[in-house]
Length: 234
Ligand SMILES: Nc1ncnc2c1ncn2[C@@H]1O[C@H](COP(=O)(O)OP(=O)(O)OP(=O)(O)O)[C@@H](O)[C@H]1O
Image (cartoon, rainbow, N blue to C red; front, side, top):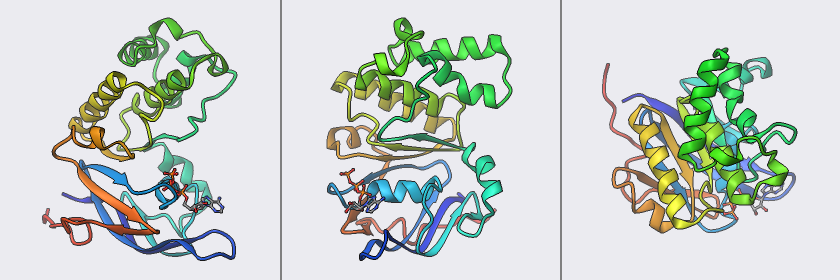
């Protein structure tokens, strides 16, 4: 299968300090399910920021969907980002919009008509258990409810790549399982999924998932599948 993400010798340095990420070389196959794990401060969020191009690397090459994003002109980034669903660690909901309208955003950006948006958003809010909170603004929602709105918004338009930073950090185990089913179902429809998490229980629930471990800014992959993934010729 083709690679959807390629990192070659990627390094990231914030300011004048040492490198936060060093020599990251890895490939994620289109359609794969990946967990990214590692101790607090290892650089997981930093790596995800490189992936959704909120941060450029200090060195190395990053390709997304086959395109070099390090040299890509800024004007081309919004179109690229529309192909990616992101669940941010701090949610980043639009404060003046209701839960419904936050979740509807990607569908409206894609030009979907109002009836189809409403049907799709209600179904998604039902799945994440927020039907009765549809009209609520983010500030009136609990942390776990905000997280579920953020997840619903990230997955509703079936992105090609889903990136989620600790997406179950604020919910109870039952809801965590339900959200994992959502990611699993999305992956079954073809979305490549990358989830950063400390939750070993969660990781055990997707047997086909591969796990990347970050430690002190370097990635390790005990199976060896990621640095030299098998290539299938078209
Ligand atoms: N904008 C920034 N400026 C300077 N240093 C930063 C910045 N963002 C992160 N760092 C540093 O980079 C290192 C990695 O942070 P990062 O948030 O990527 O780790 P993490 O693995 O996601 O941690 P956690 O599991 O606690 O969320 C930390 O030492 C952090 O202080």
